Length: 252
Ligand code: XBP
Ligand code: MG
Figure 1 (cartoon, rainbow, N blue to C red):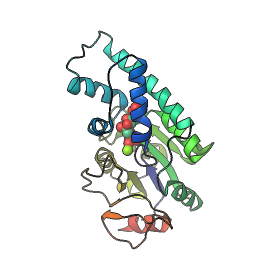
Figure 2 (figure 1 turned 90 degrees about the horizontal axis):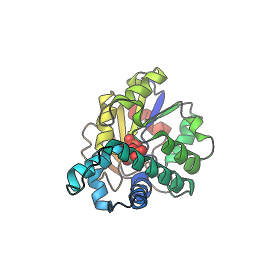
Figure 3 (figure 1 turned 180 degrees about the vertical axis):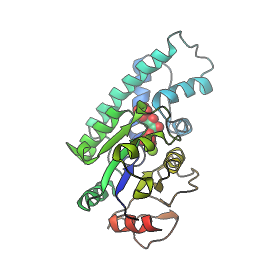
């Protein structure tokens, strides 16, 4: 089997966007709207079981705010709040407030140099991907990715496999030709549901998630001077993830 492509999740995988971006942006949108809603880090960790920002707001109301009486135009209200949140997220990212995770920039450079095809498969809103790539990876780097599959473009969000099916279809690739990169249980279930062998890099919010079925679980992608930690899966004897490692993992 030849490895042809790498499909990347965004939130929690390319960057720690949940902690540094989405949560403060949600809270700013709530404050701007005069709402006494506040998501601290612990609560946000619980709310992350629901993918999708709009869906997460609704879950919060249904499960944590019985005191809130939903207005007749509740869905519209949630969309407005979510749009405001996306604006705050973009401003945060544009200020360079959301750095890439360890090893991401190096691996993307190496993968491109090796001729591997790249794609993104994420639940987040497309604008969030654009601003993150522009300001954390560099201007024009969206073009590095043949497909950026994001947000409401598919009927069902992760853990449904739809967004991965969409990306594979657009690239006309078989899942066996690819590797996926994820950070969460919902994300892994989505990529496995699309038949993709998946490498997981955990973060503070997903350390305790169930990663059954992952090809390997790592602390991060690592760097030559900052080795990563193997948390589960085969020890291929490399202290950081490079193209040679990915090709070896693909064969396992
Ligand atoms: C994670 C998500 C997203 C973000 C918020 O996406 O569940 O909903 O938390 O982004 P990923 P939006 O698949 O990249 O891990 O508010 O734009 O939905
Ligand atoms: Mg993620």
